[in-house]
Each structure stands twice: as structure tokens, then as C-alpha cells.
Figure 1: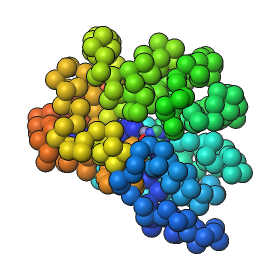
Figure 2: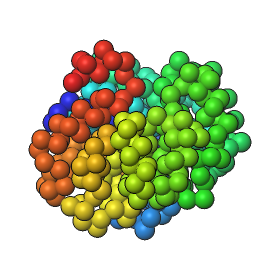
Figure 3: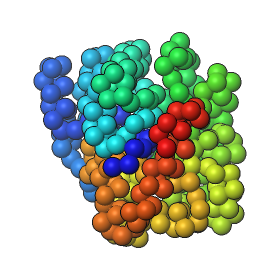
Length: 315
Ligand code: HPA
Ligand code: ZN
């Protein structure tokens, strides 16, 4: 595999059935009914219901460190040299897990991966759109004491009905704290959600962005501004936001249009594969050529929040 950067992975979406069982056992909890459930899902919400139920087994700092360590070892094997990892603190603090256990456990795994695999990385705190803007602001306040552990803020969970504009204030506050900004948009929501993420939230990357292709002006804007799109093909098939054939995935059009798209894994424990599996599936389906695999890896590195010297070392 080409050396690359993972920019779109939800750490809770790497929680596979084996680790769910192990953590349930360790914490004296029942194994959630959804353990082992995978693609296909009816839609994003059908998946999220399983995702939130399963992550209940994550209770201690050690649990988060183990989750992070397992993901990072698998990512290293996929050629990932730099990982910017999404975490959903609200899904844990709502259940009484202290936010510092979440952030310090994952940060310990990142520090260990630097030593063990030579990987760099960081954390992106995502706000859960379905809990609304006030809860997002409270979450930002709760994580700011750990500002040094954070790279960026993001926006995820149920998309339609929760447009980016709702989160203007919290993204403004995050930017004032020097945090970078990304947002999920155009996964199920339309091009207007992508415009809002860019214009109102100041998002520097769009996570997914598939539906941006429905708006020619937006496509031109994304091309001119070199705005990264972090695309997750197996996720799109699993959640029926693209397909059913991978050969028809919009990534081919994105590359043809000259957009800065790269391939990522989203929730690999649920969607049938890690970053390398996504790339292999795209090549097998004929969606991208072998040459474009190198372009996708270079785009991922260029789209990361690494300083220029760090990018150059990976290119
Ligand atoms: N989309 C939106 N929110 C999410 C996802 C996703 O694919 N996975 C985890 N949270
Ligand atoms: Zn995602």
C-alpha cells in the first residue's frame, strides 16, 4: 500500500464484535444485541442506532486506550502513517464516562503508536448534531481543558434536519481557540449542507461530500479552493448513499472533476473494511485505476493537518 493518511475514521466505529465481547466481559456488562451486526443498513440512522448501543461497553480509560491501540495497529498495516481520529465525547459523557478518560485513553494509544509504528496523529472532537448546538457548546467547554490533545472539531451523527448552520457559534468558538474545523456534509444531506459547512462553519475539509456533485457551482468552488473531500466508499454502500455497485461510486467523477478527494474508512468494524480494503475494492470494481491510488494517497496527505514538513516526509 502507498503511505497515506487516515482522515475520516470514527474510533467508536472500529469497535468490532471481538472487542465488544471482551470489554463487556471486563466491565461486567451484557453483550449488546447489535454486536457483530454489519452492512447493509437501511440508512445512516439504522446504523447509528447500532453504533450508539454497542459503544456502551466502553467505560474506562483503559478501554479507550485499547480501542485506539487496536485501530492504530490495523491502520499501520494498511499503510496509514498519520491518523486524524474522530471521537464522539457526548456518546460517552452522556453515559457518565468522564471526558478525560476518553481523551487521555485515546491520546495514550496515539503516543504508543508513534513509538511502535512510527505513526503520527491527533484527535478530532465531533459534536453530535442530533443533540443540538447548546450541547455542542457544553462539550467544547468540557474538552477545552485538554486543548493540547486536540487537533480539530467536527460534526457528525444524523445529518438531515440538523444543518451545519445550527452549529455556527460553537465552530466560531473552536476557531478562536485555534482548533481546525471539519464537518460531515453531503452524506445524506444535500449540497446546501456542504455550502453551509464551508460558508458558515468555516470547515476546511468536507467529510463525505458526495452530494456536492449535484451542484455545478459547488463543484467549481470545491475545485478552485482545493477543499478536501474525505470519501468513504464502503460506508456509502453499507448505508446506501451510493451504489449498489461500487463501479458507480461518485469518487470517479470527483477525480475527473479535479476535486481533492481521498479515501477513508469511516466505521470499518461495521462497513466491511479498513482504508486498504476500501482502496482495493475500488480498484477491483474499476472505479479507480492503480495510478489513481497514488493520487488518492497523496491527496490524503495533502489534506491532513500535518505541517508542511510532515506532509513532505510522507509524499
Ligand atoms: N456519518 C455520520 N455520523 C457518523 C458516522 C457516519 O457515517 N459514523 C459515526 N458517526
Ligand atoms: Zn463519518
